[in-house]
Length: 457
Image: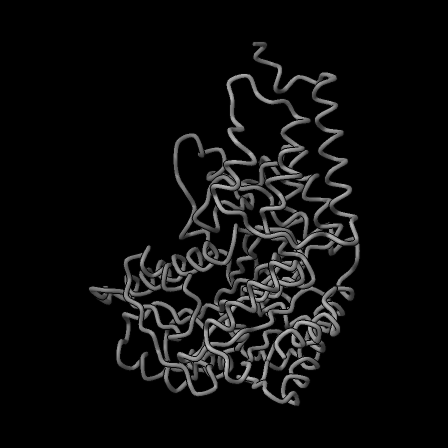
């Protein structure tokens, strides 16, 4: 076999590119994208069979296999009636530019290799930092998702605490401790496990929020062993925002790194009517927000922001002889600010979309989903036989159908997906089964949600 066959510009390659671009164009511009659903492994084995062979099956057949068998076995998370977990809703511009990023052979780990891409990404990061209220000079890096973002921020937090105690001549604690809400996202507890530090899970209040007084008690009890406090800005289950302002005020009394896990909810700060929920975030030392959630970017994309990027650089810069040309330079290299070295410039699709549509379009889209959430919550409040579990702060609506048990919710959810109308999975709170609408897609309508509620009558 010709070893250049896979890379050389030939008629075969041109035909592959044309076919893939044609499929992508049809998919991106389709008005009625299917919701689709998973197939059992045995069914996929029967339909797809063995796809990897010594000689290859050819681009045309491989694309047909994907389009007609593999893709329909994957849920479309950007569907307007995909309302489970936290969906995605990338703009057409962001999706299209994701193709450009792949086609351009870009490496986004260093300024030397990707200056133009890094410049554009940094403009987005500066915009987000300014929205949060971080000072000029704040910045960071785009990483894969909230789990990597939280881990990278907390590694920087521990490094900063270690340096502070060493400079003061204070003995290091035998075990570092991370303070967060008992209802914090699992990625924070996972980060603590990876870092081999203890998690102090502080009980949330009756309102689901982590409150300052409870955090204060943990800080008094554990002292210098606490290297960071994590406050959530929009929990996954309820969209709850912790008492960030009160927790941030504790920095006047105690030395600790405040990290904001805003993977889903921090985007809400773009809407003027919601900004008051986020008071105090400007005092944080780091924050994350996932543009692939409520900022309309494709998977996978998390913005990790540092108040002082130098704290991230000190913790994460990798040193090796082959990297000397990078580490001996003062250039801004994104790989210095998180645990990754190799990275795709995954912030570029968001840059292109923001540049194309403008910030106001984003503010309007976020506001529209907030308004829809309040409207459907009011509908649930007034409907006989339905109970709203908690008033929504952002765009997650949790509710119960009175008298239903877990099996009832499961049968109803399965029926919605089997009929290809909607994807709404069962959930629970305090041992009671329920379900929830997670609304981030501006294409989701009030009529969509009413029709789903009607299936529960």
